[in-house]
Length: 320
Image (cartoon, rainbow, N blue to C red; front, side, top):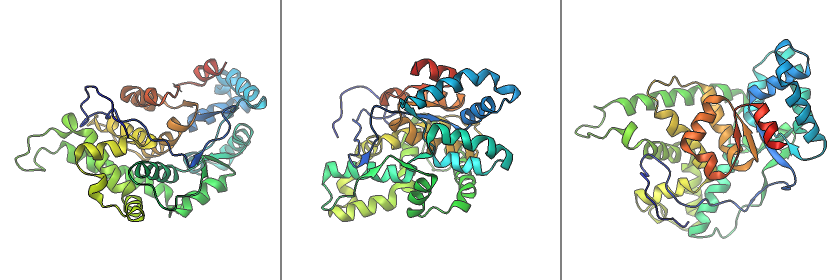
C-alpha cells in the first residue's frame, strides 16, 4: 500500500493510501455496465410500469432503461437490502415490483457486503504477507436471489433476524453518537471527538464490529501478529482506508456521525451496507438525496470514479 504526499487530517478524513483491489473478486464483462438503483428508484419504475398516477414522470426513464437492458449494455443487480425491503411490503406491492426487478436485473444479485469485505481484507493482508493457500475466486454478481442469501448465510446470516439486527445496529449507532457527544466520558480528555477525531472513532469501531474475526483468521493463516499490521495509529488507518468497500462504509458512517441531531434508523444501516458494495463495484449508482449528499461531502464516490445520481432522469442522461 503506497501512500502519496499531501496534507490531510486523517483523524477526520480519509488518508491518501491507494486502494487495494481484490483480484479474487471477479467482475462480469466490462461491456455490461452495472447500474445500482436503490429501493425508491425501483418503486418509481414499478409505478411507471403499472400506470400508477405518480409514475408518469418516470415512464421515459423506464423505457430508456428497458432499451439499454435489451441491447445488453446495462444490468441492474439487486442487493440483500432490496430483498429485505421487498419482503417487508404488501403482497400487492411485491407483485408490481418483482416482474420489473426480474426484467432489469435478471435476478442477478451483488455479493453481500460481508463477502466483499473478506476479499478486500485478504487482499490488504496479502500485501504484507501472502496467504499460503488463498481463497478461491468469487463472482461479484450471481444469478438468483439464492446466490446472495446463500453467500450471506455461509457467513452466519439468518434471514428472519435481518430486520431486527438492522434495528439493533441503528441503536448501536445512536449509543455511539451519545458517547461522542459526552464530554465527561473520558476524564481529563479535552478532545472533541465529533470535530477532531470522528473518522478515527468510526474506523476503530468498523474493525472491532465488522472485521475482527476475519482479521484474526487472516493473521493466523499468515503467521502474523496484530502488531505486524496495526503497528500504530497511521498503519491502522491505512488498512481500513485501502479497502474500497471499507472506505465507503467508514466515509458514510463518518458523515452521518458529524450530525449530532441525526435520528438513526435501520434504513441508514441498510443504505450503508448496500452502497458500500455498489459504489466501489458498480458503474453508476442512483440513491436518495441524503445518501448522495454524504457521498459527495466525503468525496468517496469521486475517489472511486463512480458516477452517482439523485434521480433516474440524471442516470438516463449519463447512460445516453
